Image 1: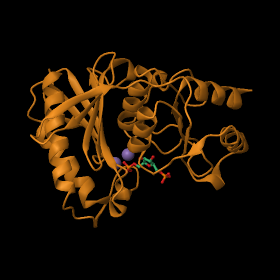
Image 2: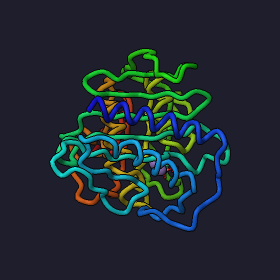
Image 3: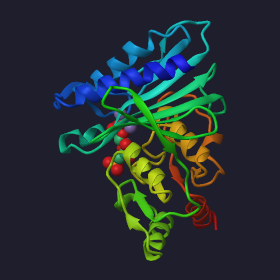
Length: 281
Ligand code: AHG
Ligand code: MN
Ligand code: MN
């Protein structure tokens, strides 16, 4: 697995460099979720495939930008599912975006999630990595190597409310819960790149990121294998909590389609408990 982590580091450095002078136009293609692909979504996907395919330990790759599973060594152990560029619709406004990776052993199930990583392409290149129990933040130094910065931990309660989904399609239960958090003093922070919004919550120590079921997207928008599971793994290992609105953890869910979506909530213990009460009476 160490080799895969090293190859992910190489891939995100290449993507970060390519992002400095990008082609931000759209391609002619749509991905499996129906989003029109930016040329940069496709390029990031190619960069990651190029690097990870060097590993003998790689059984298969699952990407937001690939319709099907891409198979490699049948006898190898690891399947990597990834979102090559999360928040790519923000490329034109030069906001921080990132890549998200989940490393599964043998089967694509959250029970088999062995490591989760994400990069942030902001003013700096940062990488958050959780391979065991600790969530570690790294920054790229001037010599092109990642330096360990610190371990990340969630506080029991935060101040940030990152509210996803089209508000006019929220149901009343969700709208009232979100309103309640603002009335308690929570402040709105939402960029539209899940990876950056969750990074902010992790670094500021707490808060809530929500992407609920809505009338226009009854199963939510965010994808389980390469967005929800890796970020839920990181948030929970950092001492936070997650739910789909009913269950005690997003990591209890199982899906059979590689592009499946789910409503999802990530936060500190306090906000997730409050949400479960609001949702379930
Ligand atoms: P992607 O760029 O990989 O398609 O993901 C975008 C996702 C996620 O990053 C973000 O939280 C969400 O879409 C934003 O959606 P809304 O514009 O509906 O808030
Ligand atoms: Mn995404
Ligand atoms: Mn993406």
